Image (spheres, rainbow, N blue to C red):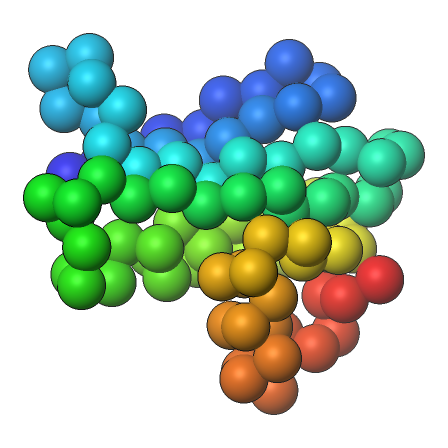
Length: 93
């Protein structure tokens, strides 16, 4: 499944859907022009254990690196990944 990105400029998400049903999403809010707060991550039971959350985070990381945005991971899942991965430390606010 493909990962999509939608935003209204203030809030947004990276998500996966199938036939109009959202199966996974990493939701964020912008706290300024170059600061993003990751609020929460949801993955449908059908996709649990398949690395979908990490894939969503990788797409988010690609986006923030390209846009030079710093991240505040309030979401417990995202916070745990940022804590474990040395290669993501430069993105933290």
